[in-house]
Image (cartoon, rainbow, N blue to C red; front, side, top):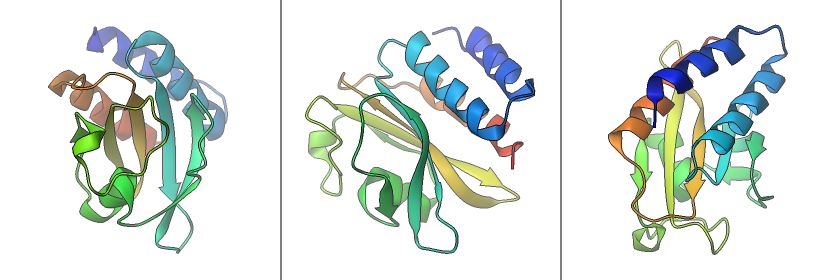
Length: 150
């Protein structure tokens, strides 16, 4: 994974004249196409003043998890903890919401605007034990860039 090249392309997407929604979709599409083990890439954002996340842009198989209550599943836990969550093997997680039998690992990174967690990027992989510190660093960078759109 060449994080420098990936980061530059993210900067280009963020800087373009498209709408915020189109930029978020472009990020999902780009990551899923460029990183072989990123099988589902999506953004969840806090749903108004409700204690839940709402699915926004994503790339990958359809999901029934368009609303996730705070505390439920990996995404819901990140909404409460405000911390990165890397799951190398989803079968080892008690509080995991299955998005499909193919998913073996997941990484979720929060997006902060003015110190407030407004949402997250969620990556599912069909490969167990696949995420590294480089993934975490890249996704943290992407979340910082996405925060500038809000």
